[in-house]
Length: 294
Image (tube, rainbow, N blue to C red; front, side, top):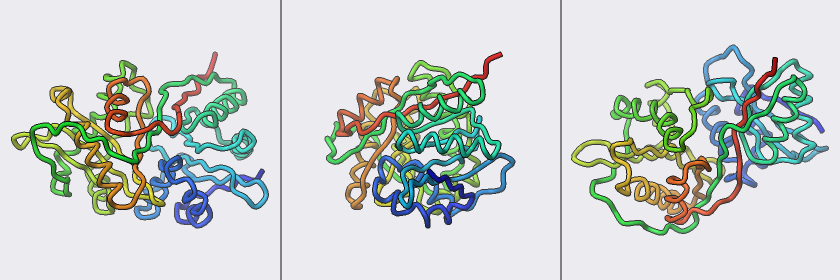
C-alpha cells in the first residue's frame, strides 16, 4: 500500500477525481470539501491540513482528509479496506503525526480510531453515530404556513446567528453533549464567499421572520448534500423542516443530481422526518475521539 498526501485540493482532485466520481454520495463530504478548497483556497494554518490517497498498486483503494478547522482537526475517512486504513495510520505515524479525532464511514473510521489509539496509548470513544441517507423520490408532506425564498449575500448577517447555533441545538435535540469538533463558527466573509461560489440556503419565513433554514452544498461529481437543517426551538413541530428539505431534495433531483444528507442516529426526530419524505438509509458512519489515559 502507498499513501500520498496533498496539501493542495486541486492536485488531490487531479489524482482522485475519477475515484470520487465513482461513488459521489458516499464520498460527498470529501468531494465537496475538496471542490470548495479548489475554488476558495484556504488561509495557511499551523496544523497539518491535507488530503490523502491510498493505493494498492496502480489502483486507489481509499481516500481521507484532514481539513476540519475546529477541535482536534479530525481525520475524515471514506469506506475502504482495513489494509488501506492500516497503511494510512502507519504513514501518519511515520511522518510524526497523530490524530485525536476521526469521522467517516464505518467500519473504516472505527478501525482508524482503534489503530491510532493503540499506537499512542489512548482509548477510542464513539461520540456521535451518524447515518448517510439518499433520496430518489420525494414523498411530499403537508405544506406549512409561510413562504420559501433563497438566501443571498444580503442575508449574511441574519444567517450567522442561525448557523452559529446549529450544532448546539442539534446536540440538545439528540440529548447528547456538544463535542469540541462541533464548535466551529463560520465568519461573515466565509459565509459570503460560500454563497458566491454556489452554496445555497433555503429559508422558510412566516410574517418576514426566518423560522427554518436548510443548506445545500455545492454539487460535486453529480451529487449534492443537504445540510445543515435547522428549525430554531421556538418554531419546531410545525412541519417546516419536512417541507423545505423535501423541496431542497426535489430541486437537486430536478437538476439531474443525486440528493443525500447525514443525520445523527441518536436524534429520532430528524431520522423520522427524512424517512417519511422518502430518504433511504445508505451507510452508517460515526465520529470518534481518542482519549489519552494517565
